Length: 343
Image 1 (cartoon, rainbow, N blue to C red):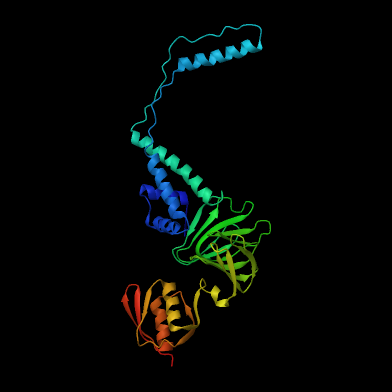
Image 2 (tube, rainbow, N blue to C red; image 1 turned 120 degrees about the vertical axis):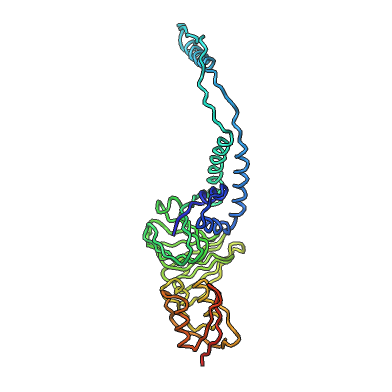
């Protein structure tokens, strides 16, 4: 798992220097609310600043020095009754002028400086003055530990950004996508998560957050979690789930299943699920396509812990024994379930 600076990603994009991994992080960042418009603004700044053309300037050292002496003489005459002769430089001095060529190089340096300044201004402005440039991007389900001891499981494609001053007086972060947090308790430094304008605040607890759609879902496993939209706020306890809609300024409270916290663990839990839902969950976990043929009994309900430290083919072999399943591999990431019977 790598960390990327938002400013670095946008800068490299404009220069055409993004690596494959950086491009994935950049594309994920673009999907966040308002970031496409921000990228367009910065592109305009980049293009305009590239047209910068510094004017030629040759300093007149003699004139400047004489003016300096005259100013001193004026101050002395004002504060003293005595007169002091101030020498005047009459010999012309030649200043050394260093030529900056080619101009294209100068203009691009200026573009970079203006661009970086614009990044700090625009990105800072959209985050209420908070700079989030410690970015973690997950390509698969991955676990990471933050500096305060908090553990985070990020789903495939999720992005977590830490504030530059994370841990100083509080612990501010931003999330795009889905994650599970086990927050290290610290009553002096609250853990504050930005979820597309919606916010979440805890001292120490564990919970799911899914910020991959317009409605943000928060599911609490332990402790208390405070969630807020624009003007609404609510406290959630273990076993509760909240659906937040920032635009509508609404929070909907629901009960949840304990199985909701098994998505990041070492086993893929299929608990009383239909064949269609179970195969969709397996396909999502392994990032493959699974097609169900007409010979699959879709009335079947499956309950099974499936080991995920092996290949999907090995998983299918288990189902072939337990449910008489037959399957065919169509392409590298595509399978068809040809037969399955629960009777």
